[in-house]
Image: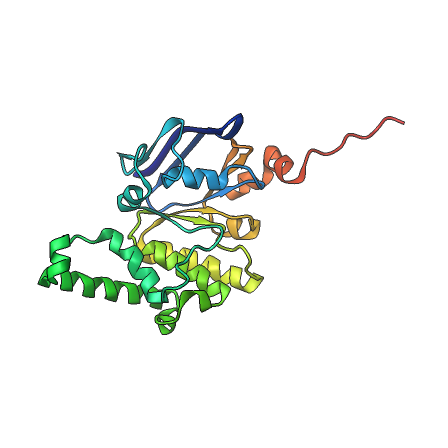
Length: 260
């Protein structure tokens, strides 16, 4: 298998607090992996480091062999890494279609002069981006809402739009930060099917942060578990479910019986 993402000994501290300590992760092309842990474990911090929000203080990150360290957010997006957010961050005043088009323009090739002069190349690329955006909206059952203001969408539709917007950047790796947050059981079931479908249709590798263990265990092939910035387990869903360190992190250490 070809290694796509190689995270090697990443560390980050905020003052005296270690948010990530010697974090390692390998992802092959086509993987669907999970990143789990209690609140405050360092999961979203990991995503923020990967996407250039924070700079790691130690270690290296490589995407398809390219070093990500030192890149800013837009450079990392262009390199092929996109994300969604735990708290939805759509452009609320823009239409559904424009939310996707804004993201797709991170990959444009025409020059400023071509844009100003409305060259044939510019017009062709704009038409192609529009068609690609509408295709994405159809995949996510949002095409009929293309001209609706995004803030007016129901919660589940906003979640789907955020994933569609991330895919518009044509990523090699898609980072999903708690996509099932706030969803009911039926919506979570549909989300699981959607994630699997996205991987197949768009040939994208997926790293998923999620607190819903049923969702994680049903679709992820490998899982990494963080606790206070430290990796306490990595393995298949079956291995993670039986790992005593994972059970302790989620359920707490059992109290010893007091002597009578």
